[in-house]
Image (cartoon, rainbow, N blue to C red; front, side, top):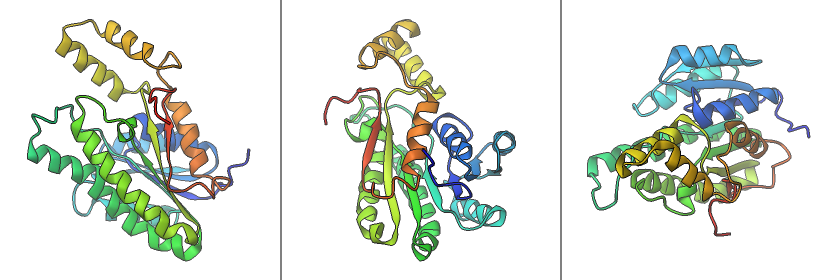
Length: 257
């Protein structure tokens, strides 16, 4: 299938590793002009150098001028963004009963406010041109809150509510707004969570991983490439009538419809 995004400018936040990098690579493989972004500038540039047509940008999206710096770098390299992939590092594990207000504020700033700033900077040009794709890397915790990850659950749920509202407001302008919800994908983040759980429960990591995989109907963790492929489709021209949705890429992990 021709995804119809060759030559489209794609900004992928937090794309120096994990799911963000997988999305950047998938979009680049389809001919998009990709802006790889992250706090580790040398790594962003290294990843970009390995893609067909990409640039790497060092940026911290949680500082006030971070989103503006990223969008300006994209415009300088390629022009106004056509595709915006919202992504951010997952907050530390924690319980609702032991929630710290400062940690919650930081999670909301990273997972909601920084993303909204990026949208505000890129959406007007998308609407003027009558074409745009906004996709957020979410979490299955939006559909089914995950135990021990209250900061992620709260921050990502707030982002989902904002984006669902936005989707209806801009659909007639040719801009789609969606979320892609990973389940257990084999990334460093999931490995760290498994290790933390193993330490809490005084169990071997391999045992924790095996139990986690057994709870997934597919019987395994997903691969970053599988997630990237799903993201690329939602950013594509053929996906023009899909908006306001939260698609799960979880191997059947969440049991609800």
